[in-house]
Image 1 (cartoon, helix red, strand yellow):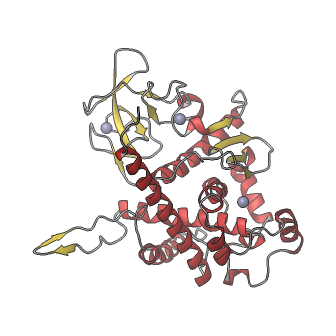
Image 2 (tube, protein in one colour; image 1 turned 90 degrees about the vertical axis):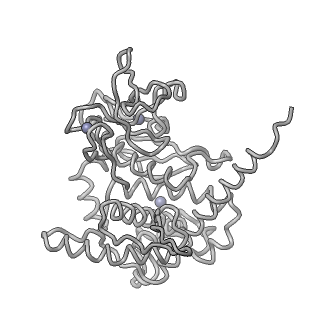
Image 3 (cartoon, helix red, strand yellow; image 1 turned 60 degrees about the vertical axis):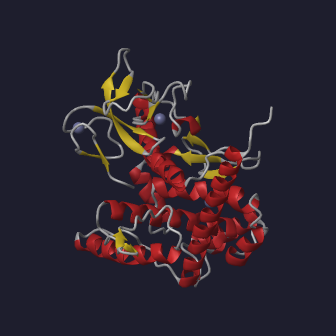
Length: 364
Ligand SMILES: [Zn+2]
Ligand SMILES: [Zn+2]
Ligand SMILES: [Zn+2]
């Protein structure tokens, strides 16, 4: 994630801030340009203008600001229901008269915002074009089974309880279990339908991940009864990934999103060296690197590997478990590269189609 600053006093802002802790100005995240705006109250209560004076319509906080601690701002003329782009994807929200459920939801929303940020940075859509893909939709339900069906991601509220999540992590012998990891994994099923099934890429997918037409329920049952194959580390990013090609894709997808997000953050925090300038004739220009737009997966991997090793050493130095408790075997690298290429091709095709639509003269 990039770093954000208050435009009034230039103090660093965190992604979750709704007030600048230095100057006290109200701040909010504007998803349209993926950046923060510093806000000055306008005439009517709850209405603001961009304090940098860039004009435009008045802004207001998303109507989930109080209940879900949402700090995203909207132009109400674009969002008549008062919900921001991320909150508008919710279908079932918890009963906030229960303070535990309200707190759980706030933690889930904070993780969900990071997922939506990444999707928007990639330029990926939040809506599919067919009924089977549906629209990315969230149901946050207490005591439900976490999973995905036709674009709807269900998340069990109990996953927001740190003690319960740790109990499940131990029970299932997982090295890593987080809310953001769950959400990234489940979003992978949505994007599989969109980019692979509907994108005509089933054959190439099967070459890399195997035949997904294998009976899914039987495969999961087998995974829970027998456990993963003993040598799963040689081919899969996690034990669960070995259950079925769909789960392999979703687990690898989540890791790809972890990787890009971590490299992006490390670059913003100046923890990675600035790439050498590109020479054109007499001039040398700094090479802008955006991990969300990087063409070469090898470049991303070359930044990620030393970073994850270094971060693991730092974690151990402080007595914490590994920051990134995974080893990426070569076949896993190929799967990550496939996901990288699939996203790149999909977003490039979409922007090309958009440009062509714009160039076409309107027909009366
Ligand atoms: Zn400030
Ligand atoms: Zn919101
Ligand atoms: Zn899954």
